[in-house]
Image 1 (spheres, rainbow, N blue to C red):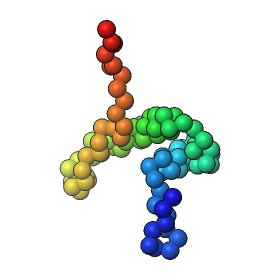
Image 2 (image 1 turned 180 degrees about the vertical axis):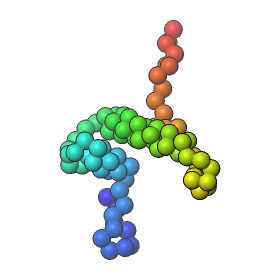
Image 3 (image 1 turned 30 degrees about the vertical axis):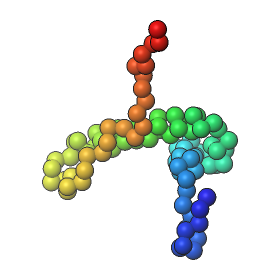
Length: 89
């Protein structure tokens, strides 16, 4: 954890950010998430974040151009998961 120049402000590294996000989603303490493996944190974060951005994207698409107010279209996903992995051999 790095302290910034502003008193009381702390910069989170990516794993701490993901742990904080996941803890809010599943109602637990961030330190509990930080006991998970790196893979568990990344995959869990990706699943929840992708679900959230999918909802945001659908809401954005339902709006007319005037209501969007020039806001950019949300990305399709936050983390790409590759499901079609070629077999070796």
